[in-house]
Image 1: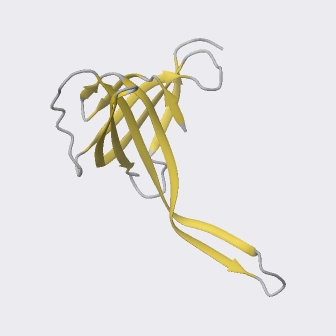
Image 2 (image 1 turned 180 degrees about the vertical axis):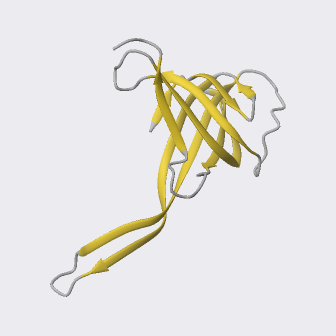
Length: 138
């Protein structure tokens, strides 16, 4: 999933300005693969352990001291235009833990900050990323 130019992005109650994108990568921590006796190809595959990696990319326009550190946990929330073309916006939220903060400096593209997080499920079963369509009419 990717949302371009989301509005009102907050993490742990702090407003994140100039956010260009928020993306969610779904990654398997452990994969079970079984092969049959009749050929070389897998006959069963499962991903019983998964993680949702969130990357928030924002443009840095001036020197700043945004004190987000690996291990910080909080609610990530934002609104974005619906990618399905529906009327209204999508409101997205996740409880997440910061795993990294990186900067990239380029004379052509300026300076960007990428905040990486892993979303935390409330019970291990429920999807840690929630979204709902808000506003507009059908």
